[in-house]
Image 1 (cartoon, rainbow, N blue to C red):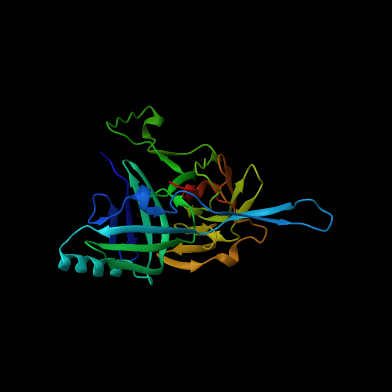
Image 2: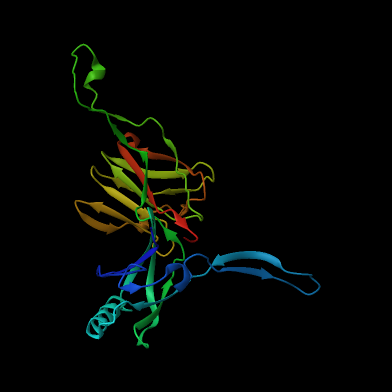
Length: 295
């Protein structure tokens, strides 16, 4: 029988596994609060003589999780050692991630320890309770999704037969023909992304355009062969950097003033790439996390 499991991993790589089969016993369905729903706040205005309010906007607040359980051993020395281990892992100075697993289903969320973890001796076992705060309230998949907007496609395969009278037999790779690619966001909410421009030759003023909204982001600079420019549009992490010969340089000042730090809407997002010069030497990729309201 498969059971739910939570694993907290701090920024030093130390992990705490919670579940019905763990020494840190926790019934996820009954003893954990805050993993499923989110709190939505609505902003509105009103004036004298108006019946009701006028909708202005909304936001989803940070997520709080309350976790209860007990250390599943009657050996006092072992219980005290596990208590010290638990307090070390839940160090409030360290950030971390919480991973939810049930069968083949897995989701991850960033979090920090909030308040005071309590581990107290009861009649038989040590019981614990602690709270995690997730400033970004959304769960995500473990790995980023990558979409290649402009790239070279490998065409070399085995067995390899080269016919001197057939020029196509000498093709080892070709340029992807489409300049418009649909990035489908399967998540529950819109999300930011990392845009990566890679120069295979000299490229000037690379641009990525959202065909649906006509928003764009453009870098007003000339890229040399091997240069990589990464732009992050996520809230709290917005910025741009150049990677040249392994050295990173802040490139925010080269972002065109009319650019928009675009978000991936729920569903279809059609993007087109271009450049003022050297567009055939440009590779473009988008990296993003699908984000979800609960598990």
